[in-house]
Image (cartoon, rainbow, N blue to C red; front, side, top):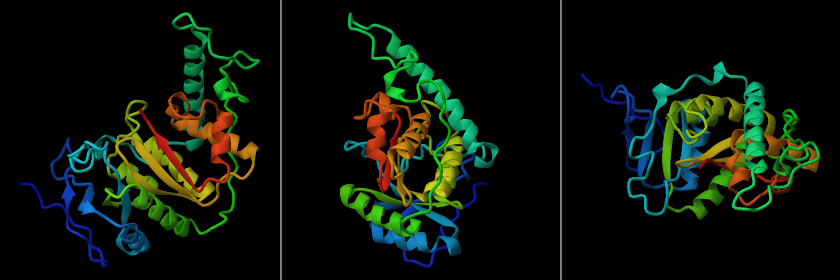
Length: 280
C-alpha cells in the first residue's frame, strides 16, 4: 500500500501546492513540494531563513521554455533521486581535473578538424585549442577561496529578487536537504544528463563552491543552475581559474555560449554576484 507523501512541516504559511512523486522507481518517493502557481522571492527568503528549523531547502524553479505547459521537469515528475549516489562519494578536486581533461581534449579534437572547407579553429602555441588558453590541455587546478564580501544568505536573497523579477512565472520548490547543493541530488534533478547521469557529482562541486565562494543555489531550471556568489573572483588570475572550473563542469558555456574563450568568460565572471550554468 502506498503511503501518503509527507508535507513540509513549515511555520510559514505556504501557497497552494502539492508533493510531486518521482517519475520512476518506488511510487512512495516524493522528493519535491511544488507550488501550484508563481511564488515570490520574498517567500523564498523567508523559507530559506527557516531552513535550519525545518530542514526544507527552498528553490526557485524554472520551466523548460515558454511553451512548456507541463512545467517540466518539476510538475511532470521527471525526477530520479533513486538513480543518484551521494555527494560524499566524490572528490570535487578529482572530478574537476577529470572533467577538464575530457572536455579540453574533446574541444581540441573537434577544433582541429577542418569543416566545410574552412580553416581549423585557432590553436594555442602548444597545439591546444585557443578556447582553453592560457591553460591549453593542462588542468590548472582549483581557484583559491576568498572571504565573502557580503553575507552569503543576504546575497542569495538579493539575487532571488532579481531572478524573480526576470522570470515572473517561477514556482517555489521545497526539498528536504541540508543545503542547496545537496538539494540538487535529493530532488533527483538531471539537468547535466547529457554529460553525466549522477547529479551527486555536481552537488559535490557545488558544495565546494559554497565553501570557497559563498555560493548558494537559488534557482534551477530544466537544465540550468543559478547560483548567488558572495565571494566572486576580483582579479583576472583568479577569474581564469574559476572559468576553468566552470568549463570543466559545464563545457557548453564555451562551446555554445556567447563567450568564445576562457579569457572572455573570465572577464564576465570578475566581480559577478551570480553564476548561471546550462547544459544542452
